[in-house]
Length: 154
Image 1 (cartoon, rainbow, N blue to C red):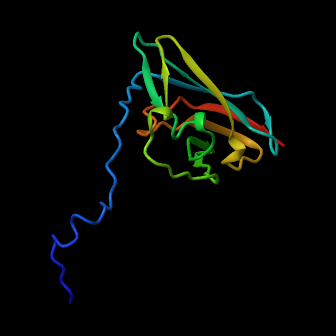
Image 2: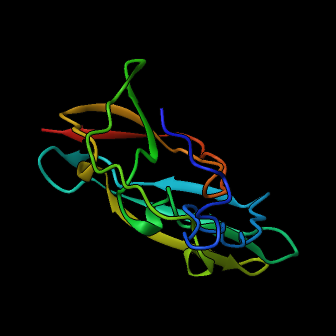
Image 3: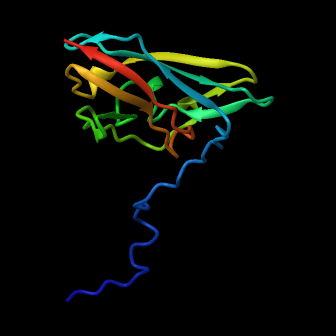
């Protein structure tokens, strides 16, 4: 067994771990997330849903776009069920560095931000009736939305 003195290389080797960048404070409390979609939709076509984040408070609120539709379908960001069973997510699972200031959106009091996203990019949804909700996360700071019912026709 070889033993190396702890002080031998201390001044010449760069640290193995970089300092953690300063975090941006998330205050997404009381932001409201709503999902809507035209129904019926057709299987094999884009299954577009609209997601709106609104700030009904009297103060500006920030949220991180990671794990939201504002960055695209990069994680399992929706809870989708049919007949009580969960629909498996089959899309991209992105791993990223810690979010920086550019990864946050600010909503001023009374403001909202909306985007559309294709559920077919991450979920296989043949003809049927589904319950769809945005899945909130501690990363984004957003809470889950109420579920909506969508019908996918053949």
